[in-house]
Image 1 (cartoon, rainbow, N blue to C red):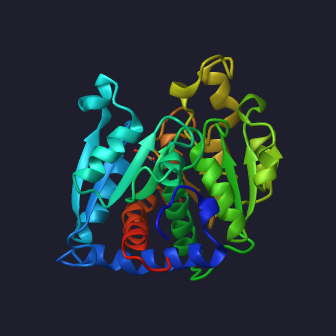
Image 2: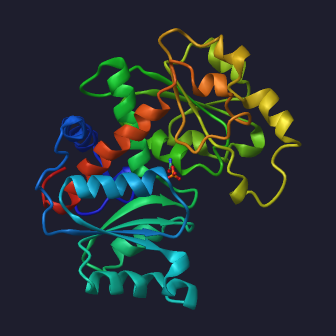
Length: 310
Ligand code: CP
């Protein structure tokens, strides 16, 4: 693959190959010398127009572990603040030697535009675009689920419940696409105001009750952050009202099976969509997700820059 702007670009076989490569590459993180020469001589630019902790740092670590040079670009301190366009910015970065541009942008479709319009010949990797997609997040979530259930192939039959602000969530969209590709059964739950029309077409049943969904004994419960920064109006009456119906609190935690896993892409709003008790519960795989972010991004960078199949 040359680019990764959407999970739609992956077949089931190529998604599994990426997860297999990530699983293998994760072993590098346990070595004393955490380095492979695979991308020596390549330059990766992290072009972030929105804030990030996990994604930006894990792409940087991933590129460095593969011996690539890494440049971190922050839109705020760049000539973007003087009005330079995305096309001119990307072409400038390529003229400076970028082989891959990892882009996070508030506009849905910005990475696709960059890749499809042939403005640049560098690889384009989507690190989250608006409410559209976050493909490497879905891949690291799938890797975590595979590890927890001990699968080395797909996620056939796994019951996954995604809860919360689906409307603004690029994580939910990429997960819906990937989980369906890998054979999981997905239910989404949240207030009506935060369930986008037609989302079931991506392959999910919709629930209006967290308790009813928990009674079906999901294997994984993925809590989503309430994205207040993307909300123009009132989507629920109050923080307390939202938490009363949709937070993973101690009562709902007690309904979870002993072997269920709790996932959250981060950053977590503790006390809003998830209690500290749930976030720190032994069934919470939040930090395993973060660690898997490095391995998945190593596999994606290698796949895009090595000219191979996956
Ligand atoms: N999950 C995620 O995208 O986190 P960051 O915003 O910190 O990158």
